[in-house]
Length: 180
Image 1: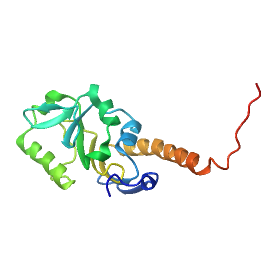
Image 2 (image 1 turned 180 degrees about the vertical axis):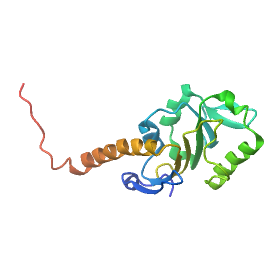
Image 3 (image 1 turned 180 degrees about the horizontal axis):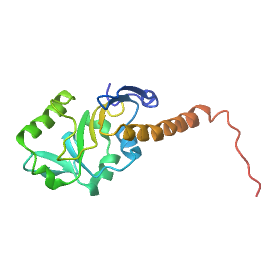
């Protein structure tokens, strides 16, 4: 189902594992996720993607997006990527310190969409591990802090309800006429 249908993307499905800090969702796009998390993304290590505004890190052989290009990533047509997988991180110089085992764990994360040993890397200080297939159709996100999931969801749901209500019920609303 390439890109999912718009009707499905207007519904939200959630299956969560609070102990594992993992939530599988359908109906929340990357743009909605990134625009509604409590604090913005700074840098993203791309594990699977088709995004062009990247930098290449020679030690890890991964591409990453620096803070000045995050807005381009958020605006990108992620549903055209098929698979999209990333972890956020604080400082690009920390990537130089990753051990081969940690790089292997990141590769495993991207391939199996589950951690081999750990989900969160102390060196990277990542808050998220994000996987999606057909943006908005299937997302699996590990959250370091459950509060980030709750904060994001508390903004996305009213947005979805507002958009749904405008589309569904605009026929029945009376237009307001204000005197000049």
